[in-house]
Amino acid sequence: ETQAKDGPTFLTWAKALPVLAVGTEKGSLILYNKQTSKKQSIAGKHSKRICCGGWNSENKLALASHDKTITISSAEGDTFDQLQVRSAELEQLRFGQAKTERGTSRASDKEQTL
Image (cartoon, rainbow, N blue to C red; front, side, top):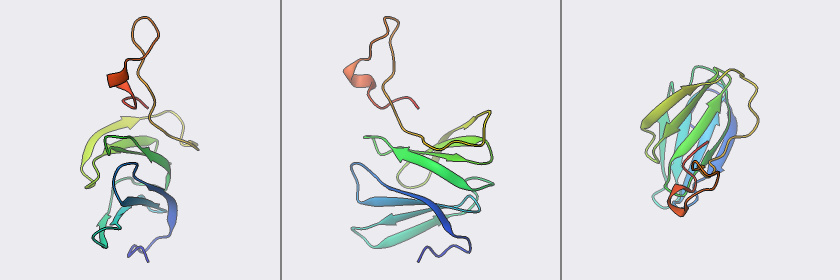
């Protein structure tokens, strides 16, 4: 049970932590820590349906919503950054490697960009 009054629309496990992120129809985020069995409900992360997202190896969570925003959050749910996008029809979101001026990525840049 998600403890939210709206249904789940998206879920993904963190890469390096036992944390499950669940996005909801109304834009809330629920974080479930399997190790501690604790659920944290974060209302208002987005104003509309969370449609996709992904974790990077540094435990940052990117979420996209039909409100045309992408949020970057910590494993505790704190928002680091929020970006506006042109389309609300995102289907997939993941972290990738940053490119340098020469078009290659550095090992330290892995999973730093969306």
